[in-house]
Image (cartoon, rainbow, N blue to C red; front, side, top):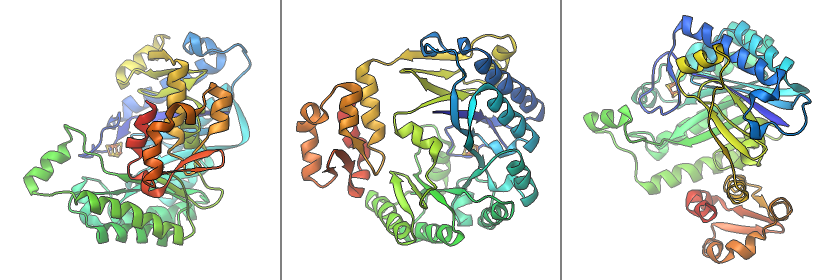
Length: 387
Ligand code: SF4
């Protein structure tokens, strides 16, 4: 089953740490963009020939999909009728299963109970709320537009609007954040009872304006050991509250794992629509042109939007499957890898993996190879064995 990713590149303001493909909201541009997005989806549905040649496969039957994910940017800046139109285009172009998971990322300041109910009507059945922190001082340092109170209200509004699958994002290792301050946000999140949580470490990219803000205001990040304590203690509290960790950064109540995001980690396939969206099908990977204006122009002129089309070598596919699979707490099924790629992982990588096993960062359980929670702290170091 395919996942369908739809990129919405508009935000009300640009956060000082953001490295995503996004720009400031512009009503006229957004309308043209939605038209282009719908057109791109229709094109893919009418003819797989609109996909890069190597990714067209042998059958001309419509492709089946079971997840739709509106990511951004700030998808909740779309109007509910626009979301409904895009979902309808996906439904017409692809064989959507009877119970597709349809996720919308939402920023707290953009939603009300009424708007959320209208998104629900439009077909959205999973909401992912960008809370980031339940402390106003931390949100202000990140130049976020919402307050902690608005974030809490957005979660309440989501329930009132009928959402029974709500996720929230929190960020840790923020400027000036102590371990205790971080745990305040974790406890506040647990108290709101979401179905799913994603916990991300703040990554300061080289030219982030936040770096300048930090230098000017003399803000700093806690030492590495504190960052490790933030992660491990948060996960323990979430365990105790009944959440299951299923990926390095993600926990869920039973039955509430993100079906869409699992495709990225389980060696799955997805098609991305909109500017900068990535796709993977039949061992081919490509991305759309990043510029919003150029994307609209290309779709309007009926020209291909895909750039960077790459057919992955068997070695690259194997490396990716191991690299991403290890992010899951279920780890990698070595028998499946052998069946799919003809490689005995242990014979090939055993010598390099042994130190991580001996150090308690990796474990072998039956046919599976997994990171321990301690190992998740150095996940990238372990994964580089495969790439
Ligand atoms: S709302 Fe999200 S996508 Fe938009 S600027 Fe802020 S961090 Fe980036």
